Length: 265
Image (cartoon, rainbow, N blue to C red; front, side, top):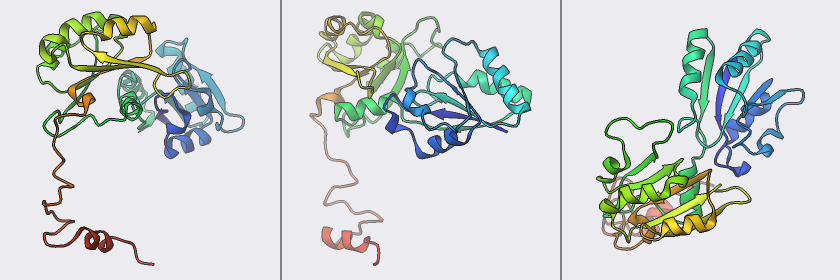
């Protein structure tokens, strides 16, 4: 018996991986975070599978379900939104499974940050602008470790993907403006990739008012960084015409390079 921690993606049911869907189809018990996982993901659960919405449950009842599944010899699909390794609270579940001697496997999923980049039509890592993406959150009921406040992280000037902070957008702006400047682009995406997704863009000087006008108050991701304006960067080393590397030896034309890699009929 194995517990599969499955990343269902940010909301669009088509963003779940094939491996994750196969696990859901073959597990006798499916435990899913109903507040964040779309119902369509569960449509392919095995006929007769026990499907349980854990949105109202604390950890102990969830572990009790898993223990019952072990006694009955059923694999368990523990379905989380996004990627379970990012704010998925799987660490505490894994600790209990280790104590109980129950096997588990993690199936990664598409993150909200990845879906946000796709929605915005941008790249988070542009040469000469930012080569680092920091995924973080705003301190709320769960405090941030020393050295991980937004002000500390902002000193790097990297692209920021901030979770769980939209209701405190004014505080986020106050912490970031001294490091990024008031004209730094910002995008706030609510329920990214869901049918009712919405977003607003602006700068650190304007985004608070724009978010409040939209009424975003949960399930939103905040993207901050100069990569959003798509200006002032140079082309990457990999695709420069005058740069050779292992797969593109110097002296061969672009057409020759492409033909050299085509599969044989």
